[in-house]
Image 1: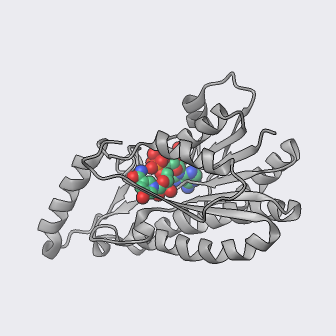
Image 2: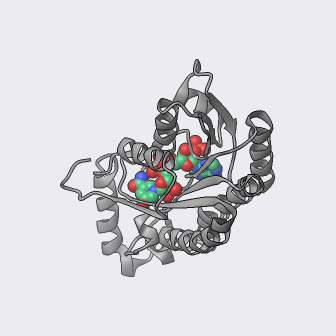
Image 3: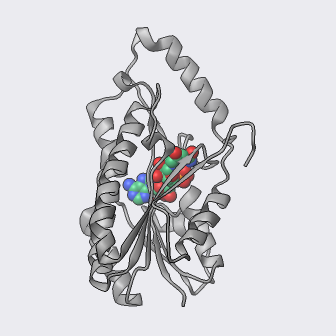
Length: 253
Ligand code: NJP
């Protein structure tokens, strides 16, 4: 039987590809992102298994109301893909406290908002799968990734524990750790960059920015392939707890 999927951050990048792959597999998909227009642009119309709803994941009440609306309409959410996120890229001291908090508000607290809103329904049915898009930067960090990585390390710690609380209730969890996917992730459309100038870091930051600019649009990882893998894993009765998806820069995905 077709499953009901809810995907956050589905207007672009990996989320859009996951929504498309789930639709191709015959599932019913509720694609969400901050802007309803962006979703319409991403998917067009004409597929009666696709539904779009605006959701800014930093708004806990909106997350509850979207989850409630889906359950009221379809009776359930079988698969939640908690995918929305972005990166504050650059050296730690170049970020304001406000920027660091914004990173956590979206990547950690926003993701928690959506999980909280959806799990309440999954728990009652004693069934469901939560796919959480973390990052290889949630497992390993490096210069320029301190702020983004810390938000993804937090996701890992939170979800690893939460998954164990949910397992006895029939709710499964898959943590996905991609690295370097060809999406808008490194582009100024999505990423923010630390703006405080600190002379001691000037050379290292220039080198880092050159790396980001060179990698943007040329990332080796193919979001379509990861999306297909996630849809395949979601169709199985036994799901692994983690999926690391990392390609070498030379091996174009
Ligand atoms: O990025 P991008 P990805 N509320 O920028 C949405 C992780 N990841 O697909 O701006 C709701 O193309 C935004 O929607 P909107 C990464 O950390 C990636 O690569 O509203 N939605 C858009 O649909 C993230 O968790 C790489 O139109 C919000 C989407 O998020 C996930 O993969 C590597 C939102 C971003 O699309 C998907 O990112 C890695 C909000 N407040 C981890 N803020 C990589 N690409 O290399 C943003 O390790 N969105």
